[in-house]
Image: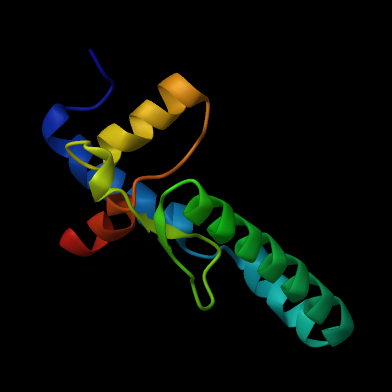
Length: 114
């Protein structure tokens, strides 16, 4: 038995998802700091872009239909051809059988369904 009534957990998860992905105060301060140190920001931006490009290329080479994000730090990919019922089932398979952590894309959209 959980610590919360089952009829409340869905709403709590939605709030948690929103808070998890919303930028905290420390991130806002970091942005201000980077504003005054553009050299470091440009280097960091280039490093993230290289990582993003590598990830998208690797996913595409592995048979995923991936979409290059413009300014996001996450990559969305179409998994419909892999035969799973939904993205949560696919992510569970990745974690359980391959040891690869991922987040279902639908979790990004649950906060808007409140």
